[in-house]
Length: 222
Image (tube, rainbow, N blue to C red; front, side):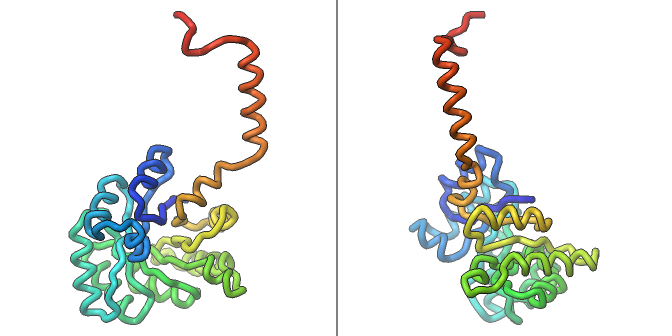
């Protein structure tokens, strides 16, 4: 499963990339606003750090303006994936951009029917929001399973399932068990995947035993 980092914080992206944990990045207007920087400058810098897809979202809601915005965003770098909403106009733009060779991430998906529509429109990625469904008492991960089942029935549908609105490590593990293609994850949640008390306890014991020997790996002479 691929990890996309859900942030516009360049420093965090670099740190995760150094650990081999970045296959792509997703941004949105809210995340870029938090950075306090110029939108185009931030997106271009991220595209230079990450080889995989970098999602940049349109802000218009009508098809004509969305398409113009999408084309402008696609000019920023070869690895741009234009993010459009799952609306009638959004899917019109998805079809046009996809046919022109641009990657498209269709976002704000909350039902398997919507996911099927996006795949038929040629979406590169579909972004179901599991956390927001959980928030209203619905089964977010259940939606992921339904979408994967539908897509698997039709090999001609090449849209990848990109699990979004992830709130905790459990979402990532469940998505991986279901066979999702991608998880887009806030950096804080990725770092939580490292945490386990037995890892900390074991490392502390190893270091204490080593200290008792009075030896040093770096100071050993050839």
